[in-house]
Amino acid sequence: MEQNDGTPSGYGRGRPMDNTELRRPHAYSTYANPDYVPTEGTNTNGIYPETSWHPGPPELAALASPSGDHWRSGQNHGVGLDPPGSSFKLSPYAKEFVPRSFRPEPRVIDEGDSYPVEELRSFLNEITLNPGKFERKIQSLTHTLNTMVDDDESMRAIVNIIFDESVRQPNLRYSGARLCKCLCNDLDASPDRLNFRSVLLTRCNQEFKRREALAEAEDNGTYLRGFAMFTAELFSQLEVMKQRVTVLGDSLPNLIKTLLNYASSDNLKCACQVLKMVGASLEDYERGKVCNNGTAPEMDYIILSLKKLANSVDYTRNIKDMINSVIKLRDSNWGRLTPTENSGYETSPPTAVDEPVMYGPDGKPMTADELTFLQSQYASNMASDGDDFDFYEESEEFSDEISEAYEIFLRDHAQPVRH
Image: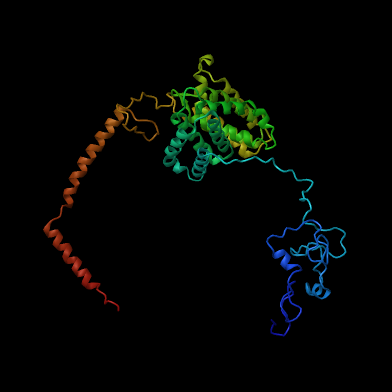
């Protein structure tokens, strides 16, 4: 094949020297035989040793690259040949090359997940991408786990998967805690086996005990922050006999203090997020303890530490603003309305649960007397407004006059229709 100017096209290795057909490789019939298995030192072509470099004809080598740089290092374009004159040899029997700095990860022998584990992983993936599917999928998952999880090891595996994924995936923490709540209530367990709640709380306690090591880990506390956030989600959702879980309520203040002791920007941000999420519940839980006599010493210590950090010059303005917002939130009783924040007079409670609470212009709830007065004024205004409608009652004489004026208007402003 030739180009327009008569110059032969193509300079590839397989280009024929003349108009003859392409050459076959040496010992083609030997390699084509499916029963042939080469061995080290086998001379298959009868000319060159198997492990030596095979120089081609000079003419073909010259055609391989017009610029003569075909043999440059790194420019062989996938051709498995060594440059001429090289001292090393290529061999198909050489050991696998491993760089000195390579540190392979330990291989985990995966014998295949069981069906309940596969169903659980599929569920976690779906609710991570689309939390709205939780209600539709939870019953099927619960039925599968109740049917097929029948030993303690399987229960631990289920808990560990949910725990690890929820700690590492920020978008799964809320749904993961919600899943834990459902499985605590709906996952059956015989008296002689571990139940879901006990295994979950045991895992939380194990991670809590090594919180100092997690704060000093190579990931700069990423796992610790994820664990603190997930623990806060669990504390906000899990209940035992309509009471907060003691293990979680006691561990969260210590987790927050650990974050404040290792006060990086990310740790302070995480501590503020935890307090905004469950600060009110934590303080109520602490004040409810008999030994505290209605006080919250742990929360007082945390807020005092935050105030000191807010005055430090080591943090950015954004971090300080976040800390100050938490301090103000706690000063306002975590945004909850207190009995002293009223309009100066007693507010009568609604007589029914579904009765709406009306607020005045000052933003304060209205009393029963104010509501009665407002309703009477509204009724009187509606009655007086009803008399005004008599003025606009349609009469025959008035309607004829309007109709005649409208017809005259149409004739005076009539325009020809354009085609």
